[in-house]
Length: 189
Image 1 (cartoon, rainbow, N blue to C red):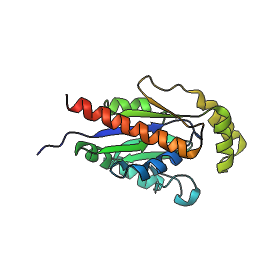
Image 2 (image 1 turned 30 degrees about the vertical axis):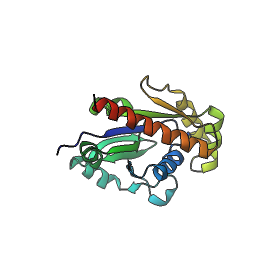
Image 3 (image 1 turned 90 degrees about the vertical axis):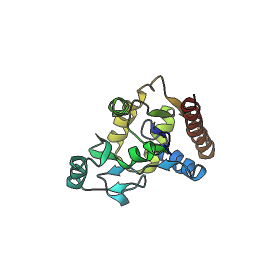
């Protein structure tokens, strides 16, 4: 029996929009969805998301071995998504990953059927969250805020996260479900 391909969903948005919190909450609500951990050249205990830590050399070796579906650089770090995501999608699974606005165009070119969820928050909320997480110096926060004005692609599902975490998680969960439902309907046509 051949399984219909699943759905690959990139979640993107500016730093401080709350992507990690929303994804963690949605993961609890959607146990049948695969949420990929990013591979990052950042210490695992440095704070932030639960990720797979690799050294720069190990990261480069993973790329050379063809073990990355996507990889990009941001904030002086290397980020990647395991090639396992492609196998999961080809076997009929829905796969969600925390992506990058800067790498999104190249990722969409490499995977044209990829769906996008854009997490948005106003500038004041972004600033408060970046300051509260305490990982960056004020000049780095200002640089991140300056990059926060990038517009969402036309085909993106927008999740506004200027709200309580519980409401943001509900919005993220609903966005993932709606993309999966639309994908299933189009596959059945």
